[in-house]
Image 1: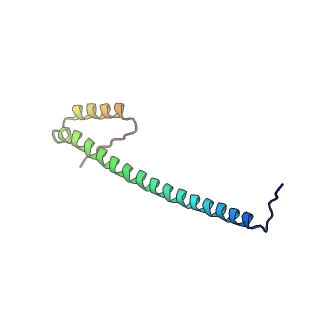
Image 2: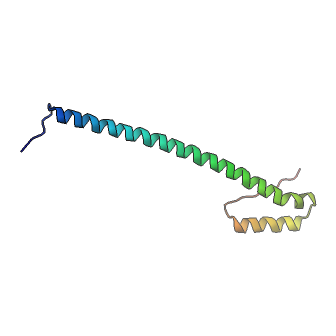
Image 3: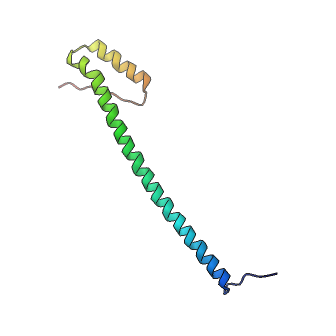
Length: 92
C-alpha cells in the first residue's frame, strides 16, 4: 500500500492546489456577498422612493381639497393593506 509522505511531490502539489482553491472560493464568496448586499440596498431604496411617490400622488388631491374624512379613510385603507407602511401627515 502506498503511503502519503509529507515530502512527496504529490502531497505538496495536492496541498497547494487545495489551499489555492479554498482561497479562490473564499474570495469569490466575498465578492458575491458584496454584490448581493449592494443590489439589495439599491433595490430597497428604489422601491421605497416609488412607494413614497405613489402614496403622495394618492393622497395629494385629498390634502389639497382639505377633505379630512377621505384622507383618513385612505390612510386606514393603506394601513390595512400594507401593515409595514407608516404614514405621517404634517401641517404646514
